[in-house]
Image (cartoon, rainbow, N blue to C red; front, side, top):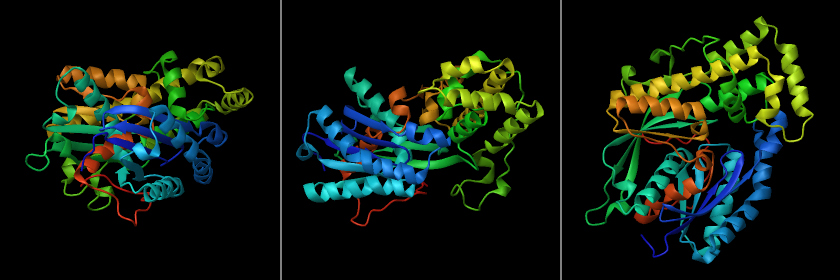
Length: 401
């Protein structure tokens, strides 16, 4: 199925960002509106699910109206509505799904369910496709072979082999679809979650990733040696990664380094300085990482830098090991942690040494947004892969085989 306009309204409400976007044919972003809930959750140092759902209820309609207005279109101009089905917080997902189902029913438009993880991958693909078209070349979707995608955020650390498959004969590349094979995952905390929890431990703000990213360059990343976690396949659930042999599985684990950080603060009796920093930042209106810098001594800055280096190195080492093992022709890094500056530098350097193409989303599309949901929905729209009437939230929704 294809229309002349190819306009998809995307809706994303899987966690703590209420987002709506209008994207044309999976590549051209006409609008991308996000209502952040950081101020709501900051006092708690993490996302409170009930508060997130309430904020989505409050923000969703205004956000959708803003997205349509900025795109210069009306509800009737939209060809389909795409919404995040999962994974995510059950209540938060239901807000977006219920709204999207009601809207498509009223408009007589098709509804498309999108996996949030696939959306993060398409955050990279849509920008590549647009750039390629602007340069007069073929669409990025014409790429053959396998890409290895690392989706790394506050809730996810996954590795996927992503491959673009041709659609029906004579239908053209627009009708082709992406297939995914899960080849790696975290067995405990996601990388972004570790950043958040460590930032909270050290008396810094939420979300923790940007704070640690900003403060790490001021410390010595080799000052505190953290050992790499050794994860053995036998401790995991049978069939966790499909048909992969145990030797092929790639596992991440970040609970160990989080515990090591806690022990370090106790051994060096840092609790009083951490509490003083927490109180000082709490007394400020909209504090930033720059406000925290004079509140951090050398030991704290070295600890932050060493923590970030260890996490980034673990992600880098295992991602490129997987790329080599599975013969990937390029690497895609997406999700909120893909905005981390040290990660981008070190991944880019490693890819250069291996002569392996690598791609990241722009900073605006690294964190949760609806443009990526609308982009991931485009191949489904063209092939008529629409959601059933019984669509509901799938908090633990998996991607691929």
